Structure formats: structure tokens, C-alpha cells
Amino acid sequence: MALSLTVNGELHSLDIEGDTPLLWVLRDELGLKGTKFGCGAGLCGACTVHLNGQPVRSCSTWAEAAVGGEVTTIEGLAEDGKLHALQNAWIAEGVPQCGYCQSGQIMSAAHLLATNPAPARDDVVAAMTGNLCRCGTYSRIIAAVESVVESSSVENSSVDSSLAYDAAVVREIS
Ligand code: FES
Ligand code: FES
Image 1 (cartoon, rainbow, N blue to C red):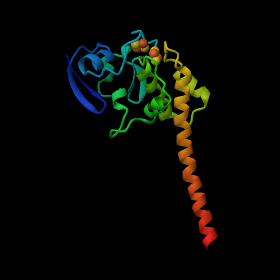
Image 2 (image 1 turned 90 degrees about the vertical axis):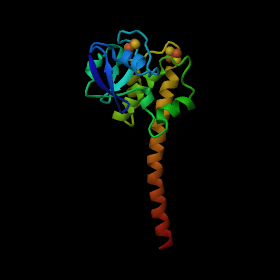
Image 3 (image 1 turned 30 degrees about the vertical axis):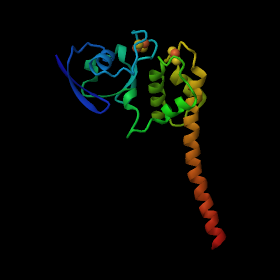
Image 4 (image 1 turned 180 degrees about the vertical axis):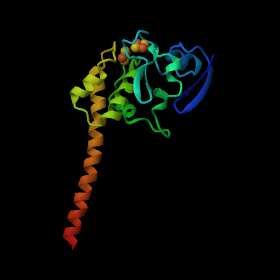
């Protein structure tokens, strides 16, 4: 059966059954190995990708559910060769241990920040609850997400304070 899927902005024509798990398509047909198989039952979050901007468990999502939609995997998160802010934060905070769960963790965090750029700690914890990590990196995951939130609020406030500074200078010299 021929199915067309758009993954990371690229349209692929594939000879697969509609009830093939999306995870199999990503890994075995398209070679996108960043998305991982964990439980295979929708429970651990290791296989999380975005479908039309929503996080889904690709082990439990049929390929046919993605026809006509946009799938984004960890490989598609960077833009114009620049890592996503979360990917940089993951590196800076040294989040991964074995690393196996981390692409799913980042995809869930990316959805959180896309929908709520200034989440409180409880929001972060709630958003990440469905992603399990056998290495117990939870505290570093939260620190990494919060560092992105903090740096974007510093960026916003530094724009404001530079405007305030400019206004003060204008007052001073006029
Ligand atoms: S592998 Fe999909 S949720 Fe665990
Ligand atoms: S870093 Fe090992 S399972 Fe999460």
C-alpha cells in the first residue's frame, strides 16, 4: 500500500501498510534513529514525536494517522543548522546519562514551551510526567527546561531595560 508522509518538512512516498506503527516507519523506512523504542505500549514516552505540533507516542500511532499531517522528530527540531534552545540547554546542563529516553524528553519539553513559553515549575513537572527515565535524570531535565525559560525572560527583559536605558539617555542629553 502506498502512503505519503511528511516528516521534518520532507514528503516521503512509502510502500507500507496503514497500520504500521509510525515509529517503525521513522526508524526502519526513513532511517531516523533518534526516536527510540522503549515499552512499545504508549507508556514510557521514549518514542515521542510531534504530529501536527502535538506530542504523540509513535509506537502507538498508525502510519495512516499521519497521512496529510506534519511529523516532526528530534532530527527536525534544529532550524537552519541551529540547535533548538532546549538542545543547547540539555548540553549545558549535562542532562543525559545513557541518553535513551532523551529525544522523547526533549520533544515533550519542546511542545510545552511552544504552547506555554513561561511555565511554572509545576507546569514543567506535569508536562514531563509521561516521559520516563530509568537513569533518573529528572532534576536535570527540569533545570534545563527552566534555564530556557529563564534565558528567554532575561532576553525579553533586557530588551525592555535597554529601551528604558535609551529613554533615560535621551532625557539626560535633551
Ligand atoms: S516506546 Fe512508545 S511510549 Fe514507550
Ligand atoms: S538518560 Fe538513561 S533512560 Fe533517561
